[in-house]
Image 1 (cartoon, one colour):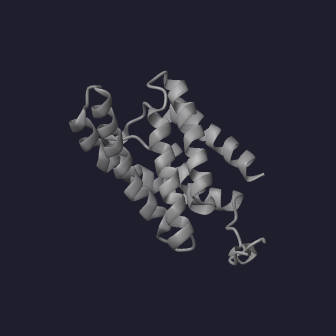
Image 2 (tube, rainbow, N blue to C red):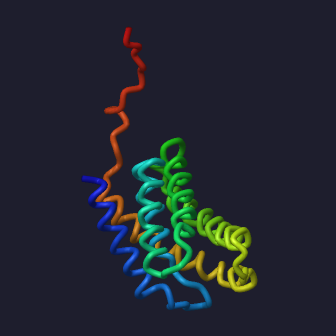
Length: 171
């Protein structure tokens, strides 16, 4: 059931990102709703779930923009995996975890996009990305509180006492 909820939520986030927020640049930066939703889901559900969700959402964005297929998928897959891993190991229940995740991944997402464009041989508008980064950080951090609250209601934290910690050998 979590996969269906995540697919619907990410589809709505992709639609909102592509149709509404993509061209809206207040203060010189754009809010990345899709990234914040993905990081919230990955933080609550783990690395494998986050990577799969990031790949699917990135593929939708690549198809919607008719850009290089796999570009956004790669960036969002890595982001979903690492924030999911962060949530599994360290900070799932901490107050600062979603804000720190959004802060770090927004910067790394922008720099990773620059690096990937450079490797692909595309023109790299580094000055545009660097000047838009503070405003993008601000908008993503503002979005974090309501988005993480909604995602936490849809995906309540998993009870870790239900997981098996002992490995039994079958002979």
